[in-house]
Length: 303
Ligand code: 6GU
Image (cartoon, rainbow, N blue to C red; front, side, top):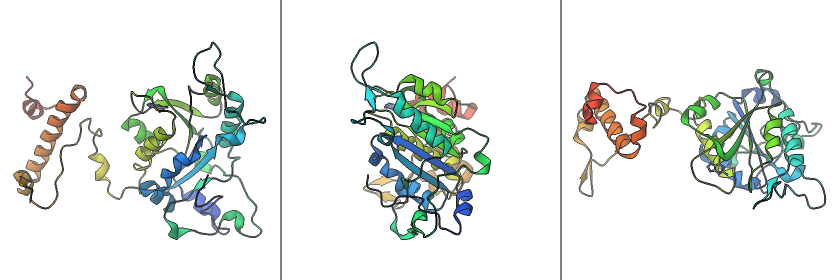
């Protein structure tokens, strides 16, 4: 694993508890391919880390493997192809991370300029475990288990999870994780098995990147402009229509005239029409779930 930085990175000796309280969301990810999670340090998520809104810990499952071969999987009972991830490895990993007994592997922003001294590099400072702050004490952390057999992940989930304080992702590979791990984890977590769509990935890592980005961008302060999520596709149950910028004419293609009218009501109506028509063409099933008024129905050619 090559991270720019390990240990309790952002915390200085003098202000560690203060900075700890400032973060909005702690994400821990357990995976046998921790380097797959490097993109969490980039762009929007890296900025959220830098701003102290987000903390990310990535953990190599193999650290909890025992025995000479450090095996994390075994053959399935009942036969069949593939391998199943072992409960004796996952159980202690999830126990340790729920209890905050894991130090290190925190991801820093990929941006180099804010590097401060490592907490455990400062003289006289003991390495210490991640601690759950007051607000999160009573609520169990949320355990998300990406699997194609899970409940479909939606924008509504992203909105709800953006208010969480501690989310742990358990990335399975191969044919999955022994089901008893998920059942047992319910003692220490609120557990959700989630799918990001009707197709099969090799493992949960890419799903974690998808879910983390969808969740973190909704945390107040991560995106500057509040309206930019109110108008997101799905926020009103419709897909967003087209957008345009300068120049007004490009390669013989003109920006629709209405956008220069200066009439906000007319522009809003046009945008709604475009959203309705695009949704009807691309995702007709979403129209059935949308509140339509007489003007909407007319545009769609209903009635
Ligand atoms: Cl969340 N995980 C895996 N492994 N495959 C998937 C998925 C998740 N969602 C769709 N396919």
